[in-house]
Image (cartoon, rainbow, N blue to C red; front, side):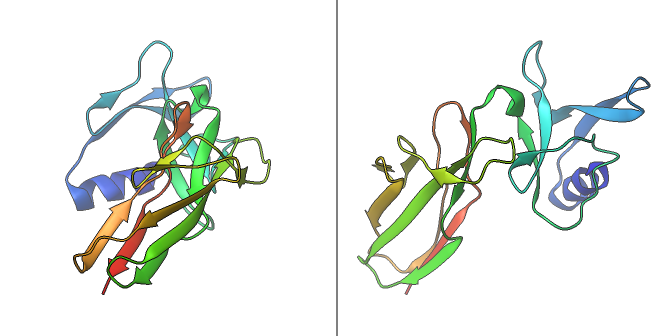
Length: 158
């Protein structure tokens, strides 16, 4: 995962910094794109929205989605969506379920109180929103206090 953040930084023009900790024989990432760890907030690594048991040098960028997340150890949930994309007509209603993963290998469950495209998810995790009236490509993410936001949802309006 250290190699992945290095490659992403070179490709997208951002920097990162870390410190080698001999006790763990690994690098601890301190800063990514100017966001630095504090005395109680750190960069963490997730694989498929689950905390990893290895550090950045030991965790390979292979099967499963890898994610560097800031303040991951102080969050209760990592958010994901029931779908990654949709293609709709202008003004159509789009329905999604927002799911929360607690990072401890527990399956994703619908989560309430998350915001998405101006809507808030109910007890069943569902949100319904109206697609923009202008054709184009749009991106949305689910957010909730005390949670790592979701990956992007891509909406194509045709």
